[in-house]
Image (cartoon, rainbow, N blue to C red; front, side, top):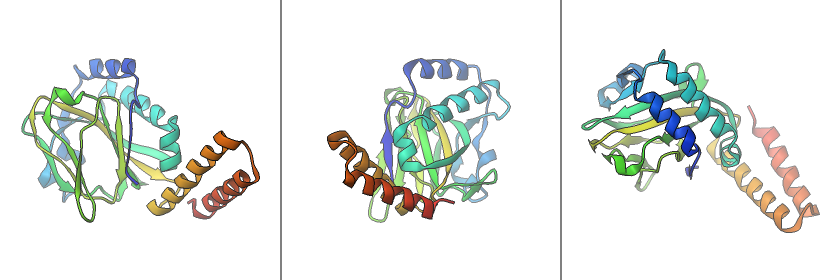
Length: 219
């Protein structure tokens, strides 16, 4: 399941992060690419030992884990391997699929959180492929696009300005994307029914089915 979450970060959090990154040390992004992705990856990433990195990762991780849509749709067991990436003019990331394992964790779900406004740069769209089409995404600052790690995707060349994002990967309690979608649909129906009619017999049956499927599918 692919979806967008607007305003994951507050304006104050964005301002603090961007101010801190102005003096941060960025390194060649190829250092964290898989062997087959190095040839198509041209960007910069925040050095792992940079002091601002820990603050950025904690802020982003906490914001996502406390967001009800992210919780319901992703079922996160761990958000891991968060990276701050910068694309200046001429940089891009060609067609690739994310590694199945990163830092000893399975990658079920990928995310890109945009730190800069879309008007601050040209190009740099995230393009995600499906069986019959490609879809481009360029969100406003503080917003996040969440998508299956199994997809082929790319970042188009930046032609003006800097594209600044946080990218990350999630190990989900539920490995299968179709199962996560079923659980999400059931929870959405459950919440809608409760808001309209309260705790009814039908609500209890949906809650029972959702909980029992989660027990069956959790890893």
